[in-house]
Length: 105
Image 1 (tube, rainbow, N blue to C red):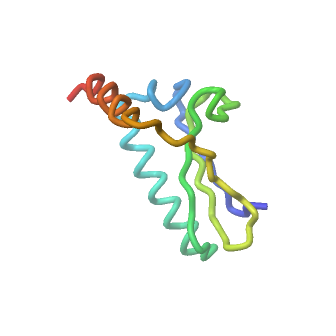
Image 2: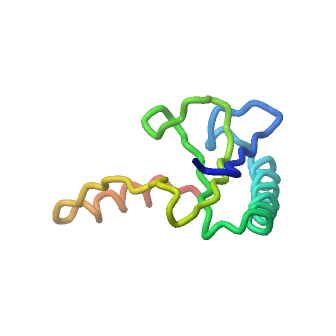
Image 3: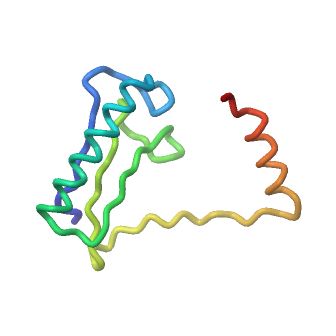
């Protein structure tokens, strides 16, 4: 059980992280930080996770954007350790190049 697990949810509907306007995101991050501080000071967790799932493959089951603040304790039996696949020779650079080409600044 993860006591103190808290959701930060915008009042306006946005399906996921990418649909969220920047000004709304800034406000939600501030609220998430403030609530995280309150959780740390009141529950004294040994750590915390701040998570958002985007898309079914990422575990999103409620299609209204929200942050999870999850207080963590050494023996809480909650694990977030994806089984990441290793890159083949040169494929890391290939993926990095694709991402760089899509970055808009």
